[in-house]
Image (cartoon, rainbow, N blue to C red; front, side, top):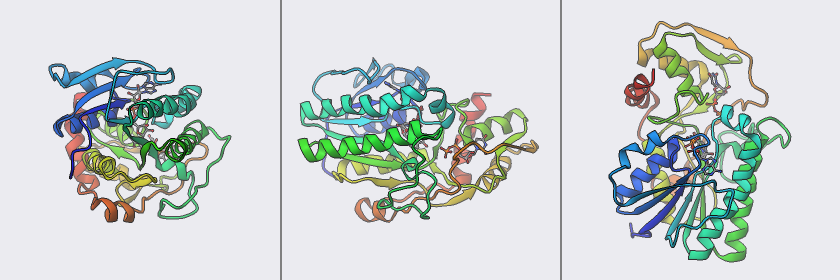
Length: 313
Ligand code: NAD
Ligand code: UDP
């Protein structure tokens, strides 16, 4: 595939996905400017790049206008992502999805750079259509506790389409489904980090509700490979990237128990408000336009993540 970038900017670079993306772009020969305000990320995720001359780190809040010089491509990954984080940081999440996205788009507009935004399966809300295909408009509660995230991301998508249509920005957006792997913050409250840490500590595994709600879990290397392909494709419309294998949360907990060998029991807690009942990406579009599909099944991905989570106990 043709080289479409040399100098790229990644917002949210100190986060779980942003840091893996920086690694992939550096491996692809790019120079990378990583921007983050450490709201939910950690410099530990970038420690291994300390001696990398093609990587620079800028600490900045992208809700304020920023410019770190000419770039060929902007990856906009800054935003709290775990429900526990975005509910704690509600107004900040709305601002990074709105002002932050506008500021990142302004950089792309100024330099004629490409732009790829980390959107989310949350745009589909508690979906009434299953699996979720990109043409589905979603079922989102605009005033519920999750709306600070869902509506921020939907606003981002609308803003990106406006910059594309009105200013000709070469933009794209990836609707990311639940992703896990090394560097997922151990205490960020997402289900894989919670269950893995609880299992390794010998604590009860917390299941919210009856555990029959479903999610589809994508291993991080599969996701990042899809994102790089999508960025290079120039596709402007939203594209789902995720693993279509669908698991109930109870089945996920059983797989965590198997992989960790824990004897931890399962304990049931109340279901959070507006928690989506089912979620599975339809990846026909990504398969068709990118030739992409995930390769790492859940059990294998959890085994690959085991050493990382063990190091955090
Ligand atoms: P993360 O919390 O690990 O990383 C997000 C990063 O953004 C953090 O380093 C944080 O400090 C930074 N950030 C937040 N607000 C900022 C601001 N105002 N200015 C600068 N930096 C800021 O989360 P993640 O899982 O790596 O998610 C990355 C992106 O992917 C997010 O946009 C998220 O919405 C999206 N996404 C992730 C998933 C997933 O399963 N991990 C699913 C769907 C979408
Ligand atoms: N969940 C759970 N136990 C936990 C954390 C989460 O049962 O310790 C459930 C949560 O209610 C949701 C699913 O697991 O149904 C995925 O939650 P997560 O916070 O990882 O992401 P979401 O897909 O909801 O954004």
